[in-house]
Image 1 (spheres, rainbow, N blue to C red):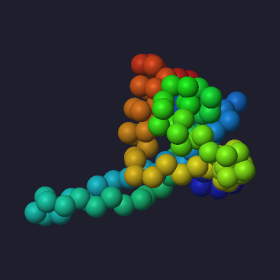
Image 2: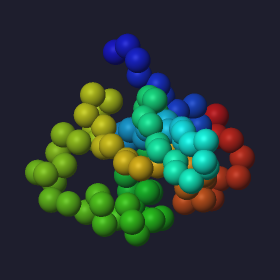
Image 3: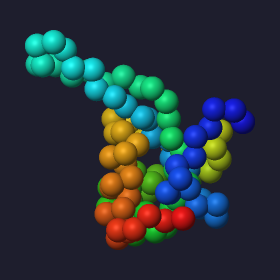
Image 4: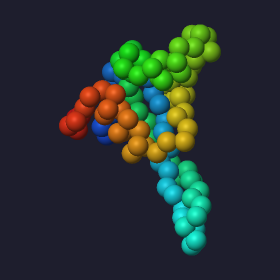
Length: 106
């Protein structure tokens, strides 16, 4: 599949939860009073569902839906779970905190 960008730090080949996070940039006006986010592209993260749920209550709530409602979402790169309103770089920092990673994962 063309155009798929896998995160270099948080793409685990044996992961079982695929999330798509936008790469955002901020356009600042001349007056510097308003900032509009504009989607450029997306980055895919392949994570471990149980680990994410165990470490973070927010994800536990999001992913604690009836199986039928999320059956197809997040299990393949063609049907990722979209994470809105967060930039990929910010999401990496969140994941490093959740997983206690202070060094880059290879």
